Amino acid sequence: MTNWADDVTLPRLKIAGYKQGFGGIARYHFDNASLGADPRMRILITGGAGYVGSVLARILVERGDQVRVVDCGFFGLDHVDRRAEVINGNILEPDTAWFTGVEAVVHLAGLSNDPMAAFSPSLNYMLNAGGAAIVAQAAKEAGISRFVFGSTCSVYGIDDSGPLDEDHPTNPPFPYAISKLMAERMLSCLADDRFRPIILRKGTVIGWSPRMRFDLVANTMIKTALTEGSLWRPLIDVEDAANAYVRSIDASPTVSGTFNISGGNYTLHELADVVAGSLKDRGLNVSVHVEPKKDVRSYRVSTTKAERYLNFVARKLIGQTVSEIIENARSWTSADFEQARYYNIRQLEHLVSTGSLGRIGGFNRPKELAEPIHAR
Ligand SMILES: NC(=O)c1ccc[n+]([C@@H]2O[C@H](COP(=O)([O-])OP(=O)(O)OC[C@H]3O[C@@H](n4cnc5c(N)ncnc54)[C@H](O)[C@@H]3O)[C@@H](O)[C@H]2O)c1
Image (cartoon, rainbow, N blue to C red; front, side, top):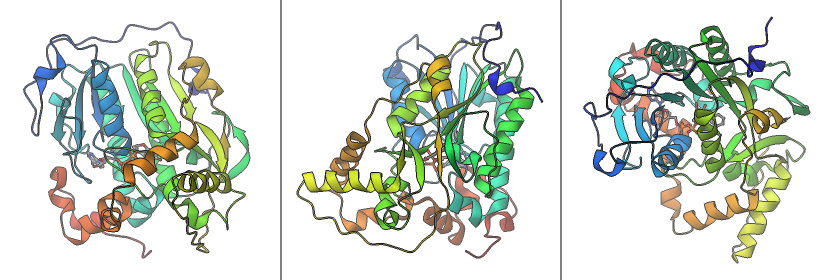
């Protein structure tokens, strides 16, 4: 089989440039005045109200791009940078107007971790595989060449023989990573001279975001570090992760394929040490609670290909990332931390139990598709 992931050196067509304007379909808020008359680029981010997307949206508007976010608002929409256009929409029901004037699409929308996918495998496959296909097809039909997709290093499965490069066989054991691999394969089918997808297999993202998550490893590692210290995990700061998307948007049209994106590979013990050290530096007592919970994911990845073709190198040291989380969260009360929206699975359960999922972003699915299939 041709390894399309290596297809990075073809002579390429130029990216189609649509200049007919961007406004007119804002349904939430859109402060066009602050963007200037001649934006650098016009970029659509699906899932742009999420943890990574809301950082990426800010970085792009700050460098002069015009940003359109399409998001159904699982975790709210208010925190998205006011300079971005925000459309409350569902990727399963795309509107051709979303793509009008757009020069690059970053696709981040979907269920974003294992617990959400396990809660409803059917919703997981619909959104992460089907939704990605629907958005990619629509982008291609709209003549948009650059499509950047947020995949995950967990497509490699349980394999700490690494560092693994992009040619390493994929072997995802769980619905979330399987659905991401399905989306990758779909993109490889759509890829051609006119459609140049870039797939970013990100490690676990950590760091501060306007849409914070406290269900990611940096925030739970103290509970698990002592029991699972030998497990490896590639980690990346959320701003570095956002910058990998920026590099992909800016990459030459000749560049396409799959890239590992990570700042470094850490054992959970190492990460716990950094967190404990940062807390101690601030005079905070660390209480470590060990849960006998098994997390079998363990892998290390190589980022040589992203360095070479995307000119991407993660900049932030893990200690800096951890310090920023602590500084931002210092004024938070215990009640703040407990809000469901900072924990993806709790929020999904809340949306399902209150019947809100059907109202968010115009989800019109049969009710059973939003309900758990497996008891957890
Ligand atoms: N955060 C990580 O550690 C990490 C690591 C690897 C890959 N990824 C992938 O990167 C992407 C972004 O991750 P994140 O942490 O920002 O996730 P997130 O859960 O914070 O954001 C996902 C966003 O998608 C939106 N969304 C969900 N279904 C939608 C639909 N049908 N229509 C429109 N919007 C919808 C949600 O409202 C949410 O704002 C995801 O695809 C995730 O799988 C994340």
